[in-house]
Length: 210
Image 1: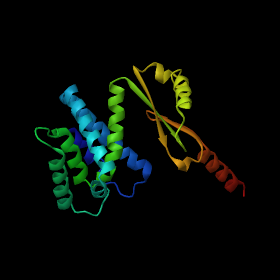
Image 2: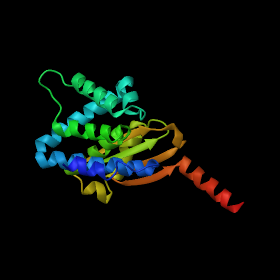
Image 3: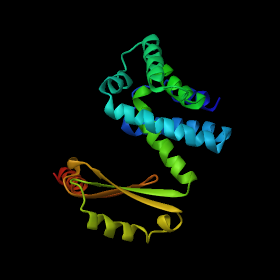
Image 4: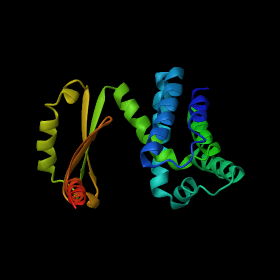
């Protein structure tokens, strides 16, 4: 199975940092995307909805979030709690697809539930590409005014990436840690125009000159 084969290649790598963890999430994202699309476009849509729902639960339910990000639980405990979450989310005739259940089960078995949000984010990007969508995520220290977002969207529409897309989406993400300026993410590319980036570069230059 696609998910299982992808998992085997990343399940036992110790001491990985943030960038490596992102690479792991990408492997799972590609695996679940491939598994869903191999079944049918309808399955891909269903899995997309299910993972969006699970992501929403992660954001709103503190108990689920703590469980997913707790690496100390035994496999038996993770399996038991994951089944309980499935039972809670599946209401009436609405049941989660085998692809979605298999993804979360494999993540649980390999102690990678902490990667769930990254996996879902990567999966969403692949679905957007499949639909011909391009999403520009603009990160700022404070929420951007509507007129600023409108001007920014007009500028982004002139890029080759946007012109090749069927649908262009621009979202504003707030992160006070960047201090000021902007960070623009689209696909696997990042344009860092943040004040924090400039401060870091300055600090590095000063350190090297001493």
